[in-house]
Length: 409
Image (cartoon, rainbow, N blue to C red; front, side, top):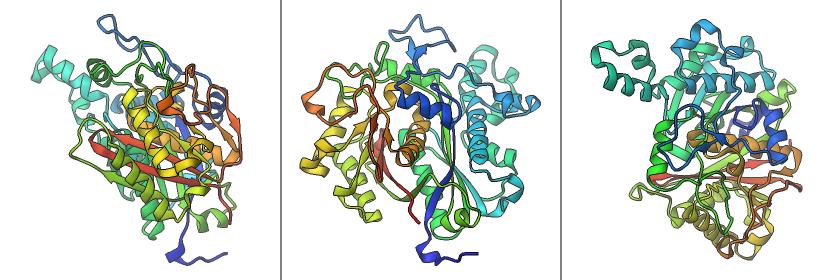
């Protein structure tokens, strides 16, 4: 058995699980995004006749009973169901039987924006029925902290479980938390990621601030009209390199570190200096030169301001080299899955460095001089990728940049 210095402990990804509007499971998901498949469709979970927008990235073929005993489903909100399914897929992908997991040395870190969709149902019942006729089970399960707790109960894991509510950057934050715990030797394994079920509240909110496109998301396109709301869950199974090598696990990628920047005073979007700080911190922590970055998975929401700001920061950080770094947005296919977004994108980055294929930005038609990056328009690009940056920027200035690296022993 190989031994390693804990002070130089490395963290790797050995399992990937995803539930998304373009595919369930990493294989179907990957085939869809590298072929430029759109998961956008007309909203079916509620009537949108009073809205200007009628499309979103809903998951239409998710069967929770394929992962969870039917008798337990009434006690789990949709976000918990998506999370448990993604975790089950990741553990299965890692070929790591639950019987072999040290429950005390395994942590769960899940990010979200909206929490459990049950909270919306609870409020509706309160308005319609009054407080005495409300469903007590829904009330008990509506709290966001139940999401990682439900994963822990389902898999009988009694290590730390954390809910990370840092909005659209929550998935990156969750991966970062798991990385920290394993890096310093507090944990051997971590189930990390993000989840959000499709939310009428989020849909209404973005509709009210005129941030949504009518039918399609077009990041970096001159005529982009906004974002689209999505849903999903992604889980990465992290473990120490020592553990992975000792059990001859397939390693998708290494997580060498991340950077965060919190500009809490700016409550409506991320500012350029906060975004730049997150990227520079990530590069500094991981000791990666700007010249070595091969791909950037953009936050790329498709709104005018966000895309312009992100591109201006990329130009500022990478100077003249920015033209040669592919910068694509898979939100063009998924919409914006809220707290699941950067977790799904981190999973995509792991597959990108493993397979050396960069997913495209679909729906790209007209170049924008303010966003003149190589957005990998409409068709995937085959390119060797050793280092990928995963950008995630959130309301409240919660910015995070995760570094994903090709694994070499």
